[in-house]
Every structure is written in C-alpha cells, then in structure tokens.
Length: 243
Image 1 (cartoon, one colour):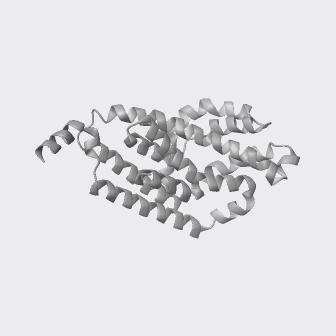
Image 2 (tube, helix red, strand yellow):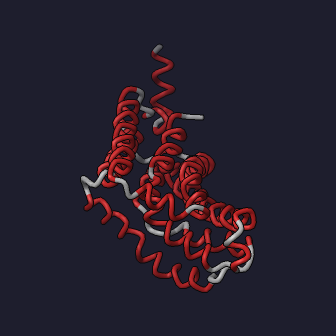
Image 3 (cartoon, helix red, strand yellow):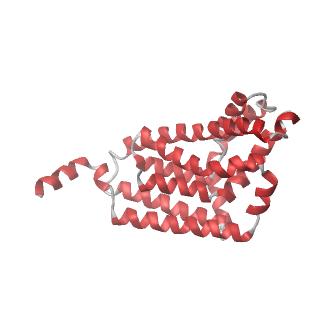
C-alpha cells in the first residue's frame, strides 16, 4: 500500500471530531427512525449501522473513481511538476483541516460550500428514505449522505486526482472511508459517550495537531520524491536513455 493510501486512512481516522460533528446527527436520525426493538438491541442495530457506512463509503469510492479517471486525463496536459503541485495542494488543505479541527482556523469550513448546489438536490431524496425499514434501506440512506459537503472528503478527492486512474482513485477514497469507519460505527451504537468525548478541547487539539504533522510529512515526501515523471512519460524515457 502506497504512503498516500496510508495517509488517507489516518486522515479519516484522526478526523473523528469532524466526522461526528457532520455525521453524528445523521447516524442518530437513522438509529431513532428504527423500531424500538432494534435500536435498543445493539446486535440488531449493527447490521443497519454497517449498511449505512457501507453506502457512505461506496459513494466515496464512486467519487474517487470519477476524479481519478479525470486526473488521468488532466495529468497528460499538466507541466512536468503538475503532479507535485497537486500533492502539495492536498497537503495544504490537510493542514487547513488540522487547524480547523484544533479550533485555530474556523474559516476553513467555508470550503464545504462548494458542494452545496449538488447537496440541495440530493437532500430531499435522503428525507424520503426515513424511516429506515431494512439494512438495504440503510445502505441507500448512507449512499445519499455520502455526498454531504465535507472539507475532509474534498481533500481526499484532490488526492484522488493525483492517483491518476479510476481504480487508484477509488482505492484512495476507500482507505479514507475505512479510516472514518470506527468513529461513525461507534457513534451509531454509543452516541452519547462518544459525543462527550469529542467535545473535549484536548481531544480536538490533539486530532488537529496529528493531522497537521501528517500534512507536513506528506508535503515533505512529495518534494523529496516528486512523481513528476508519471505526468510526462516521454521525459522519463529520455532520462533513461541519457543514463
């Protein structure tokens, strides 16, 4: 697994604070729409929460595949260091997320306005899926909510552009989604306890600092090992001939 996939996983993992702020209420609506006999039994609740998250991550993977395929075409027209520029842009956005989670850069939330026009069309569909009546229903509910405007998802999608293929773009978003899975799964079962935990300023600051350090590390590795030859295979071939 490439370092980019690992970074995407850990960004998802340490973004618990933001994920629960965005999705905590949604997963709560899902849970409370279920019959009492299901929501009061954790074993019966797990298939519904799992299906919701599977739908959410499926949407991430679909978006990653689209953006990755687009990136494959874009890379052919970018300058030699275009790939490096996109990687650094992703690192800058990740730094913004870290500052936002730590409470030092609240204005970063404005990036989420980008997806609001699309979300206005999708939100009514999600409302028609409540109450949830089956795990399949929960999957569809999650698939719609996977398109909720989110700065973290947008950052991961920019990484997907640098993946330069539909498959790798989907895999990168799968890694990101897998990182968010533990928090959102637990939120669906232990909502009250986890909500109290993430409200701690120490937890928020720690999560933000960890993501900032990851962003700096990702940017450093991008500069240290620029993958610019991927965007210009002819240059790579010429370089090999010179050797």
